[in-house]
Amino acid sequence: MTNKEKDDHSNATLDLINKFVDSNQRKRINLLTQIEDEVDNIFKLGHSLFEIFDSDGDDWAAGWLLQVLKRYKPDFFDNTKFNDWFNTYSEIDINYAELQLMLVEQKFEEADRLTSSYLRKLAGKLAEKRGYVFYSEVNNMSGKDLQTIDRLWTIYSTGRFGFSIQAMILKSVGKKYELLWPKIGWKKDGLWTRYPSSFCWSLKAPDGHMPLINQLRGVRLMDSILRHPAIAERHNNIL
Image (cartoon, rainbow, N blue to C red):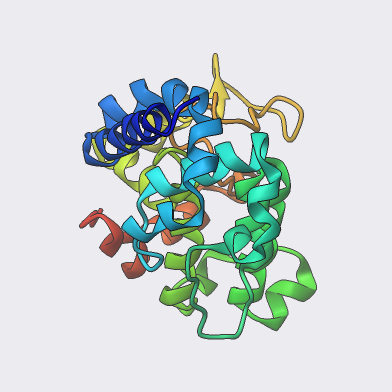
């Protein structure tokens, strides 16, 4: 291949990535396979490709590029900073690198379990000891940490998972939980989806399917999380 052909390939790939970044949600979803097909050329563009993204932001286009590279070009991650490229913040010194790595690798079931353990940690020592969170403990959770968890889930799910996405869907169904459950795949034909075997642990899951919150403890825990000011703030999403 001549240098000119190489340049043409690089420019075509960059044009595709710019189109992907500039598109709305629906158009981006339609470009996912095309981005995947271009992985060889994306890999050749190298680490500088991520200079167009804000590591403090939550642009899931960067998340998808990282997931595609992780699956097909693991050598890209010899520079280990790309395993947790997005900056994360915590008020109680939780290191979210493991959660970010699980999500980059699309190990959603493991990421979900990790999320539950973080929620117990955020709720405090008593919640950690008993193994679950009371809804009354949610208000005192660190907003910064809840936003970090929510950001990571949204970034690595093509913008379709996360507490704030669940809140948006709840708002769209008139704040009726009985309409939310089937929409996010937690209930089918009036029966609760069996955990963990019947949940869909992949990007084929319905919008809002993850992270899970234990419904055996009733709706109040989930309601408290979705109404937490830090989650409401994420997409101007006040319930």
